[in-house]
Amino acid sequence: MSVAELKERHMAAAETVNSLKERLKQRRLLLLDTDVAGYARSQGQTRVSFGPTDLVCCRTLQGHTGKVYSLDWTPERNRIVSASQDGRLIVWNALTSQKTHAIKLPCAWVMTCAFSPSGQSVACGGLDSMCSIFNLNSQTDKDGNLPVSRMLSGHKGYVSSCQYVPDEDTHLITASGDQTCVLWDITTGLRTSVFGGEFQSGHTADVLSVSINESNSRMFISGSCDSTVRLWDTRVASRAVRTFHGHEGDVNAVKFFPDGHRFGTGSDDGTCRLFDIRTGHQLQEYNQQHDDNEAPHVTSIAFSTSGRLLFAGYTNGDCYVWDTLLAEVVLDLGKLQNSHDSRISCLGLSADGSALCTGSWDSNLKIWAFGGHRRVN
Amino acid sequence: MVASKSNGSAPPSSLPPPQPRSPPQFPDLYGKRRELARVQMLQREIGFLDEELKSLESIPPSSRSCKEVADFVTGNVDPLIPTIKKTRRSCRFWKWLCGMCCFDVSWICCCRCSCDLSIPWCCDCMTCNSCSNPCQNCGLPACQCFPCCSSKCFKKWKCSLKCRSSSCCMPKRSCCPTCSFTRCTCYPKCPNLNICSCCHKSCCFPCYYCM
Image 1 (cartoon, each protein chain N blue to C red):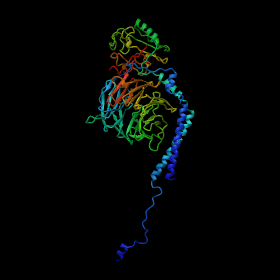
Image 2: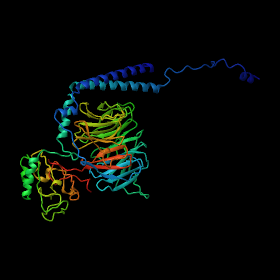
Image 3: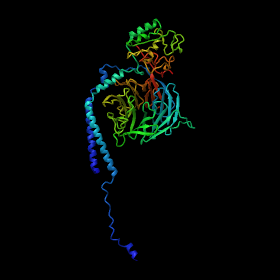
């Protein structure tokens, strides 16, 4: 077959793909008989209300000298690791605000960090296209720096996101600018599986975020600059289980809903959305109208333990607390006292759900917790 | 002379005259394979989309998923959400009961768990935020020692309990499997103690507010 014939076939196939996608979209619309907010209102749900001191900033973690890009809590809940433009990872005791480790990175261009499930190690990745693992119990070298215990190399683009597989200190999933996600075996330093790639059914642009399902750690989702989210099964790397369309911009953040059957997203289009992984339905859009028609991008998201609250950080410094059932903003942490001075770049909830940590380009991290009374009227 | 003739004049007649070569029929074999791979990829994609279209026939409408979300959200407690319960009468009852005397009334909250409020211990020895560990008067650990409803401090320690199963309150310590007394690190320093709303007063979340 000649190249010209192949090109013709390619064009025909591309047209078929587009028409099938359109048919899918139309069929899906017919199945969307309501959204979460519509259903909740029909059931008489009322919105969550916060008093002025119910959710308060109770700690400011100061120590970074550059923009904070990423943070992660330990599963045993009172420690946080943060990554910053200053080229350091800092491990914090969230209860005392003390720093337990300040790790100078061989490559300062860090973008993401993660705590291992046991809390013994931290991982980070960035523009060096590698994922570095640090054992927090290692001896420091003569300059007082913690040595890298393992370098995971193989990505052909920057490492934008990493997360340890729950309950496994030896496995980690990374997302990369090379359009792939990789499951790593940290013990050997080798790639166990590559998800997507040039001739695989995967993302067609940079992958920016990953989230592993806590209730089924074989499943994970990835958000990408191709405006889609893909659901992957770690046992089947050749194709995504499902692709979720809807966003009209880069998907910067993805996070599983606490029940493990749904997930939330945050995008450059200024919206957060809730998708169902079994049906593929978009169940809700969380969108705040802005006067100037230029919605700030969503940089990061997290759900509270019940799933009732969705925390979303925005490029303009806002940090909305969405009532997920009614799709209403019930609080803006960015407008409270002691809030950040700049863009919220990352946020995360402690394992027990009692505290939220936000990281910002103002170089600080802040811990927010319930400061009110458990009221019985 | 012979040699100079053969080198300098006419070329040997056996060699063909130089001609420009025509380009090969497929100049870029790699490009062809690449194009083929792209077509195959799209054909696979068409297969996946066909599968997805077929699967949509058996997928329930979104309302079912919305119901699942609402059920999950409302069925789980959340340490970051204010708990407001319309149990004013019950509270009055507890205030009255607790104000009359200080004793362990937790046994009341153990039968099929129909109650919404439990104030198992209280101690009139306490003034606000002054309970030593253990309390010198009643001997209870600080986390268990709460002011009586009648005391002026009571309003700071109100604890709600919403029982969700018959095993919720018996035994009391297994009410919330993740809790332990040692986590009540903030009492008595913190007047805004985060008391676990799913459980009784002895299980509370680590207090990020007061330390």
